[in-house]
Image (tube, rainbow, N blue to C red):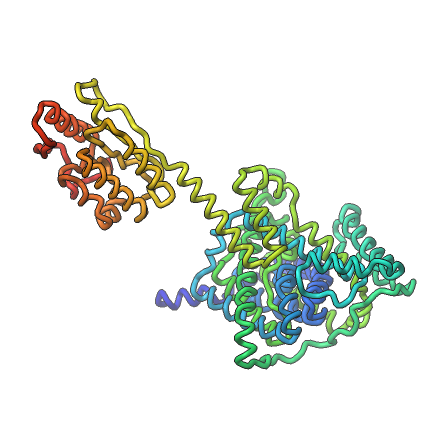
Length: 589
């Protein structure tokens, strides 16, 4: 098979994706049922939170869950609607209506699919940790704030800044005592069950139990709270959403933003899952007999194939009238902890939700919206790890600033712009750190002192000679007024870019014009091309002023000073010592 053929084959499903041995099959079935039970209330809640209703949330969990499981790059990833995607979709729904969401899903899916085909999956590894944590904290805050209207029984509060919507909802609910008390009581009941039940009975799905309990109580006492209402009792037939040129132009921007979020969230989720330990018997036994490291075959993932799978999942979801899908870290974590071994577990999770659509839409339609709001509020709080935030905020001032800026921009402006701004702030601090690490040191001359050595300046350039440090290094060397000869040691430079090389060339030219002879020692082979192209070597007075080793350079410098002190007039070009290296010699000494 050709290289191109193998490259395409790597992005497609294979026989190794599913292991049907009895023990593995049993583990996948149990894990899939567990995740399906956990995902059901989340799928309902995220559909409502996005403004499209619970139906598209269920459709997305079923269709996208199966497609991403089959075509994605992770064996344990579970995909579907997520809180971050609901955050992005809410303003799109407010501006263009719910009918635009399936079209956005298809357009975004095409973009993500192309990103996978063109092998852009590794890009996510360049996102710094503080940006990821700030982004997560911001999303958690938005999810929580978006649930305030439902928690207070206020309807119609969609779109706009989530903080303002939450405040306006609180003002609107003031004075409506009975309704507010019922909805807040429902939220409190759900929150208490979700927080307490895992401690009492860890094996039970706390979110589902909480929603069922809240629904039963609301039905028994006739609570005046809004319910989910009618749900589809079957999957809709696939169709292509209506598209015209004007709508396409208006949705291209939102679709690209959705695609960026889908790619980032899915790859981050797969990367986190890859580091999670599997329970016995899936992982390798540690000293205590329990799994202490992730099982490589199970947790290994292909980022490019993951993008292909997520792109196809969003396209399929949109064709069935659903939402854009992403890998969901919460459900993926449940899947791993439940012992999932292959993609079959994620498929089973979708089949469980599909069974609800066909068999249990009546009971599900009676769920109070406030109960789903409570589920999402607790989920939002759990998204933020206090220990992780403390670790980032106390690590360095730069990391703390990056996290805070990313979180604030996520809540106040936009999710995608938050990642972009976070990356820019992180890049600024990183470049500043590299620039600070760049230094120039004046060193004593090696060997016994000789007359005239005070007129020889030996400088060692460390770190990086790039645009952030070039001017400072240039000024420090140029201001030395005592030298007749300057020797530049470049063998310790780790980085030289075009700006740094240009500044170095200007430094050499300035010194030579002022009558100071410049000798260059130890250019690394990796730096020689850029220094040559920029013209640094052309600024030297003589081509033999380039050295591989320090002793010949110092000897040459002393000969220049001796001639000047002997009254020989202007500095001449004496013959280079035998050990002097020409530009073509090895220059990494």
